[in-house]
Image (cartoon, rainbow over all chains, first blue to last red; front, side, top):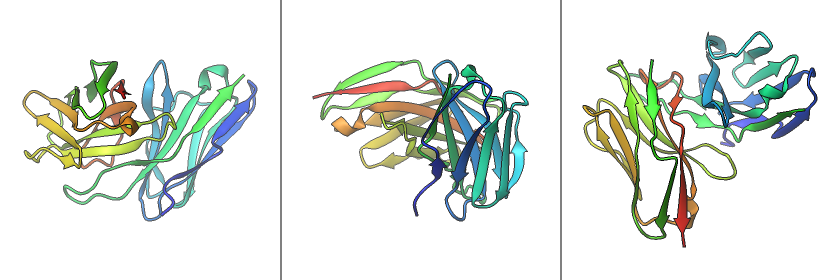
Length: 117
Length: 115
């Protein structure tokens, strides 16, 4: 398996522009997570999906952020309009369904480094 | 809510020696998982080792092992025979339930390997 795939790997944009980050989870994984990593706040969960349905979006910073998962193999994280404080590395992760005491391990993509000027 | 604390921002070890990275956590859950992830300069988050809270036996993966002290809520990582490729940021993390929920991360420990 190719692992979790994210695109683009780097994105530089200007304040006010729309940014779309993309993620393809590992085939067969039912859970998909979006995390953000910054120096100030470390790694924090933004939102996660189970079977394409958003389960917990309490980490989404504000209405400028939105995430979708139209099918089991694709998810997007959109920022509109973008601001300099959104500059961070955004990770997508996926994990398989765990049974009782099953495997809850999350596997991470390579991340997208976003710079908003 | 879960919290994870890593009190060592930086650690260094001589190549081939052993080093232990500390982690403490707090949770009100009875079922939870604990993880150590490694983030090399490439920034890829790589799973190092996983521990299920219900298991008393400490997890091991080759040169990596944990010391899981459930009552003390401590979860340290021991790296034996340190290699240059072990240089990275190491993050301790917890997830409640069976693991398929959000990971709560510590602030990380930067490990340097001295040749």
